[in-house]
Figure 1 (tube, rainbow, N blue to C red):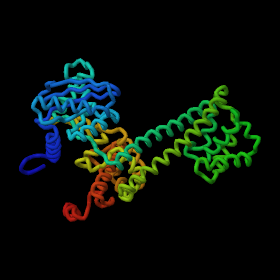
Figure 2: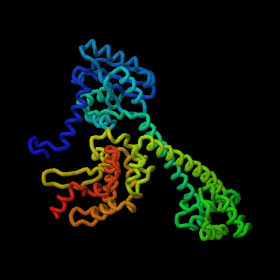
Figure 3: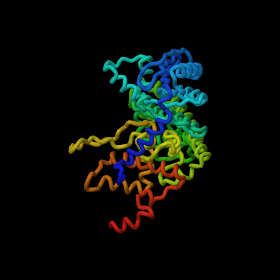
Figure 4: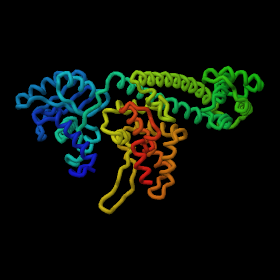
Length: 451
């Protein structure tokens, strides 16, 4: 806290953000609020007191709104305004087209969060009444109150990384879905196969045995018993290249060969279920191949940005893991601080205090779910291999006061990963364990004196 003004660091950052917005949403500019749709765009031209100066509804795509902006500029000039500022909700990718048109016309452009519009709709007349015309007015009112933000203007590389990240997210969902369907089907029609390995879908030998079985059995795994143990092993060994492996685990393959004679499960479902498993294995392998290709492309983008070595300098964090996180954040330099990135992910603590009352502090979860998931997954990979993160986890779960549960400590570790990534990318400095632990060279004398 500052000694003279009494302003906190948050106050100063908030004031700076308001100043930047006020420089764009000026009093001498009218506000063009647009409720975007697929084929219908509803716009309201408003002043800063919430009065509607004009309305226009256009049955066109968002990228064809150049005429609307020209109309709004003319209407604003007739009412004595020097220009307009355009605002909308960030729905899909339509808003990017409108932003491009506004930038080309040298108009200001801001976005309003959809959640803010939803809450404003409820507070407007307490009826939750929703129409495109009312939403356009609500968007304009929020902009006039500066309840808006400057959207990300990503360059080509950062935009490509974000699109690749979205593609990877869908492929991860597809691969996980295929794996779960395979396990679910086998538990119904042939449960003995699942008991052949501790983690079947992670065992290349188990997958090769399953592929060899469903390709030849025609709904009856016992048919492959005719090949004998050595013949079955040879058939499974021929499937290994499909799963990126070379060596066969004889222990798992032997269990699988014994399971061929098992008749457990729902017999009527076996033929159809195993046929479907065969299709799912092909889909799964194809999705994994596409996933590998996308991840390699994401690493190539990191190379172009000069961030691969920096991101990989954090022990336990791979270049792919860092690329997934950065695909969700965009350029970290657009955030005011590392705490802003944590809030963007929804991993910041949400306090519940008033006077002497101290309620339960929870994770806010008011952020980008994809970023939160990426940080959470990266934390699980980094925790066993990063000594600083492991020490942090141990301290948070064993300290005398304010001890956290393991789940809460993992959330704090995921937030720490985001702060580290923000620091090394914005400062272009490799990760340093001493600084990450909060004991850099400048602070060591003070720490020694305090000890």
